[in-house]
Amino acid sequence: MQLELKDTYKTIANPSDEVLFKEKNSKFFGYAYPVSSQEEIKMHLEHLKKQHFGAVHFCYAYQIGTEKIEFRANDDGEPSNSAGIPIYGQIQSFELTNVLIVVVRFFGGIKLGVGGLISSYKTTAQMTLEAAEILEKTIDVGFKITFDYKNINKVMRIIKEKKLKVLSQNMEMNCEIQITTRKRNVEEISKIFKTIFEVTLTKL
Image (cartoon, rainbow, N blue to C red):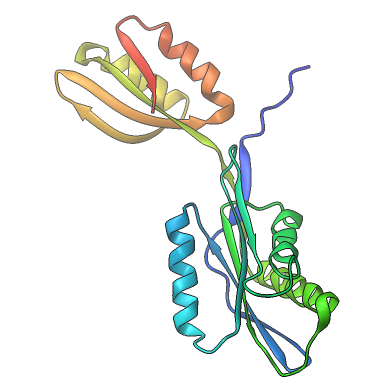
């Protein structure tokens, strides 16, 4: 029995609506963003710091990547592991990647203790993800197909039959088409193109 290759992942469709959780006068504002790079994470954090001028803590966690995973949990001045890790726990609980969750805290004058902080950050992160639209995406692999113009019909027929997504095409004397396919179809697509004489397939 052949094991089916996992080539899907879950993430959020759009930035979530702001959620607010209150605990003993402290206010916790939760935000979730779809992200795929450090630049995007930095941009969202900077934007929130301008928006919530006067907030004490901007605690966050993120996970990016589908096969090579990169993640971080940041307590931003809260007691060690009382904020970032509970937030990251919700990313794992919802089985998401390519997502950033930020919880902005306004201190209300009453200390919550480590247990209270863990609970508050976890609850805010959970509420934030519950407010987000979660969707499943496929892990895609890109290829470049290089061929002579005379072979265009053969190549286009395969693209159509196998429902391959065309990213770009350049139809000069030497034709070049960039395509993507789901990870689970990579072997099959490679074999098909390699059987056609005068057609070169290279991974992007």
